Amino acid sequence: MSSLPCDTSWPCGDFVKFLSGLSHLLLMSNTTVSVTSTGAGDEIASQYQTKSMTTADIISEFLQSLRISQPTYVRDPELRSRVEEIINKWDFAEHMRPQILIGLALAETSYNHISNVDTRAAIALYCALIAYLDNIDLFDSLSARKFPRQLCAPSSEDSTWVGALRGILLSMWDWYPDFGANTIFHSALGYFSGAMLECAPGRSRAIHARTLPFVELRRNLSGIPDPFTCFVWEKSMIPDEKTYVEVLPDARIYINYLKCYFLLEFACPHFIDSCLVNSDIVSCYKEELEDDTDNYIYTRAAVTGKSVSETLHDVIGEWFAARERIRWLLPQGPAREAWDSFETGFVSLHLVLPRYRLQELLGGEYLATY
Image (cartoon, rainbow, N blue to C red; front, side, top):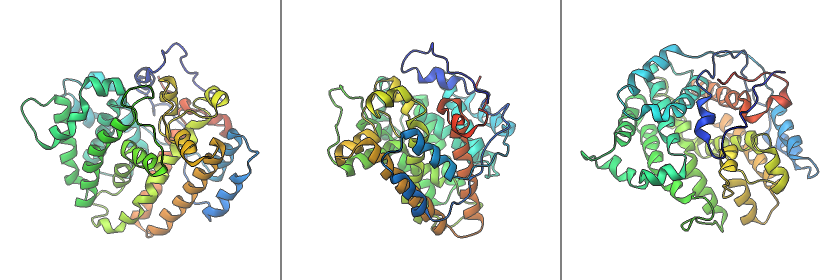
């Protein structure tokens, strides 16, 4: 097995430098995954209820239960050219080049079933623009809590960043049914509220959750799972949103929790060894480096009175149950095929990045990230 070692010279919290290594994310890959249904989710989830299993054991068995195979995907030159054409008009584009590369990688892996390049470009740039603000100091310095009002009430004083996001959001009605476009727009506004609730501990305005419903609210706002779901079904392919709207609650669980499994042990093993888990469900590595312990798994364990190990067992069981419900709810045909393609790409992107070290369990190779 070959891998690209992490650059240990990066300063703590310098997530941007890590992301900048993704400029050629898909160039030299011979590996990706396809994910097939494992059958009854309850039966699979039950194997994780053995309390003596280590976190590594739990995640290893979870990965094996996905029945992973290894086909190939490649970079999309047409998409990258279209994105470059758009961002050449942005005066801030070079400052968020790493986030643009992440957005491209996501569009190329998880949404490559969408034929319209403009739709894929909008997805990539939506994700990039939101990811750019995933730093509380930058969020504060830009007064980003005011951006939702500016998005809804344009003025000549708006920043070019706000104008760029507004343009991407408005384009969603060109590519998605009204419900999907509304949800994508609404979730972007919700992200700002979620970010305001996720201040690092120690800050005077940090909110320390005391109930599980609040933990879930904060997670769903800042994690923006609904757009990732609605992106799957472009209106030229699935014009009627009634085909998929019922899966949204379960897709929230699927998208939010999946990243938890991939990041918990292998993104920050020494951190878990020392304090069980101080890791965000979406960005364990980043938030560990930034000394952010106010995150989903840790907070959920605290408010429910359970150990982190028990919480991880619960989350895995809930994820499998949600995954099976999604597959049951979606009708056979284009809607189900689109979801299956998304799932394959979404899983593969996490499995083959060196950041997560999951090939230590699977025995494959990582994507080159240089």
